[in-house]
Amino acid sequence: MPDFSFIHAADLHLGTPFTGIGRVNEEISSLLLSSTFKAFDNLVDLAVSKGVDFVVLCGDLFDTAEKNLKALLHFRAGMKILDEKGIQVFIVHGNHDPLDEISGALELPGNCHVFSGNNNEWKIVRHGGVDLAAVFGISFPQRAVMENLARKVPSGPKGLFRIAMLHCTVGKQAGHDPYAPCSLSDLAPSMRVDYWALGHVHARKELCTDPFVVYPGVLQGRNFAEQGEKGAFLVRGSQDGEVNLAFHPLDAARWYELDMDAAMISGPGQFMDKAWGKIEKIRQKSGSKPLVLRICVTGRSEFSGQLGKEEVISDLLNELRDGLAYMDPPIWLDSIKNYSKRPIDLESRRKSRDLVGMLLRETETLKKDPGLVQLAQKELEPILASRAFRADCPDALSGDIYSLLEDAEFMLLDLLEE
Image (cartoon, rainbow, N blue to C red; front, side):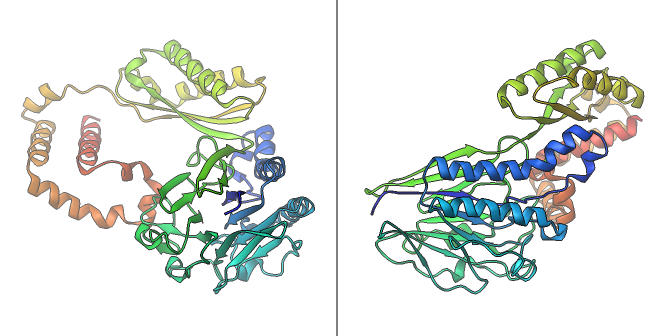
């Protein structure tokens, strides 16, 4: 097998409007509005600078609901640059840019191949008269595709590296609609595909290496659910069959939530010192990237009482914003979220004869009884599986039943104490 290289990217979401933040800060709004385009330009530059043989783009290139002609034209211009460099591009469309909404909207150059919604043919990638790899893909004909597309992928041609492109949901993926659902076992047999190039899940994930099953994640973070560096994978294959994945950050701006432990804060001065320390640390980590930040205060402290006052939060936020006003690159502090609570002496409260004491004793009994825990878990299953719950409470999905019970215990305690 000849050496080859390609870029795997997905979920470009070109032209995202960022409407919410524009009402707060005009400068950062302008930067964010251009960020998806800049990240895409960085993707094109990477393909050219690395001299890759081809690029695979795995769905949600656009948000067609936005009817953004600028996004379509910008994408076409990028494809023309790749065409001039002899770099082929393979495309599947996803739930945000399905074929019935995008088809015919833009004439792409000859280096681009868009897979249909009922494809059954592998495309051979050739360079200099030599066959390098075989690529297969299936696009979303419409927004909601609920069938298992992975099972429709036929065995690829032997003797070539086989890449299957899908916009799909492998297993349970919190915060994502389960479009084109499949399991890892549907992708596991390596005799038909060597590399599953996936899109739809916005977090970067390498689910398997034999065969490769990879989500590159969103190209540009667009909210606090898409924190940290974002980009694409550069994949290299060698004659001896080895495959190397290298992630390349391509984002133009980054989002971060900064966690602060209320137990370490005794007053507003200490809050400011801790906040500036965390901001400086993330600024150095991100280099020259513009940042959108949010501070989340958790834990328990007597200072929580002050943080519960709207005027205190407002003063802290405005003071930090004033200090950030002349930062280069720009940093916008979106908000300070106070999730902290006053301290509770559980041991002494558990011994009390009031309602709070009864609650603490009952929850202690519950956590020690496997039968009751299993019953609680069964009752919670339909709630945890709810799409609305996944969207509004993503943090709850990461904990086990005991952590959920503990959270519920403290929530009830706080309500009763009030």
